[in-house]
Image (cartoon, rainbow, N blue to C red; front, side, top):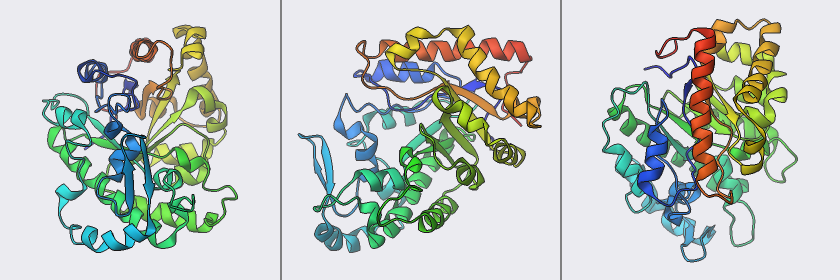
Length: 346
């Protein structure tokens, strides 16, 4: 198994599409396809809702498009959930919770360099789902401990289904909440946060990786035993490359970086072109080269993607699809510049 490099393309999964076929066509247009998450099609297709399936204590409201949590219900349902812990299908995403996922699983993608899946991670899930007292469930010790193992099992089951499609399958753990966990959040100190994240990722099968759009503690995140890191370099590139020593250690032990460089939001996308995006990315790479990172090593362990997901553009899917086209064009431009071959990175 190997995660591709050599500036091949993939993208974030949350997409503004309301048509499954159109969304899948966009996902399949990239080198490493993925199954799209389409919350505007159905609330079941929302990443938080998909992560909540079978989680004890969850109180869904599909009409109001919200999920909440009840501690009383968690206590009552916990034993039933634990009774299913050795049943892999219990942790998979059902057809009710994603039509798109099950369409994707039926495709023959064995000839692609890789395929990719994703699931919302426990930190972000735990920060966004609140109990009857409006307290994030991340701060409840009993719930958090269960959640770390529950989400790890969900990720492992999906990863194994994707590996059956393509041996180079890998997963993103979507964790936008990672940028907040080391701030002064009441009830979740930084020492506990570090221990929990290390335990969580140790429970996930390889290849294992993280996607996020913000600025976390990069030294900590790059120091985790991860295989791939996907980030918004368009917005955060200057900060990210200032952690060159940690980036170097991550690459040296075989880690892949997915450089999210093409904006998907309408206004910033309209201000950029391939030349300006190329210049922005090359500036990041030159900084790392000056810090002693070998360019060929960096390129062989790098992929490209749009910078973020976006659901709010006035033109719906159009700018997002244009961003997909731009990342393909930028990849071709850079691969020609650096004479990279169409092969999985080493």
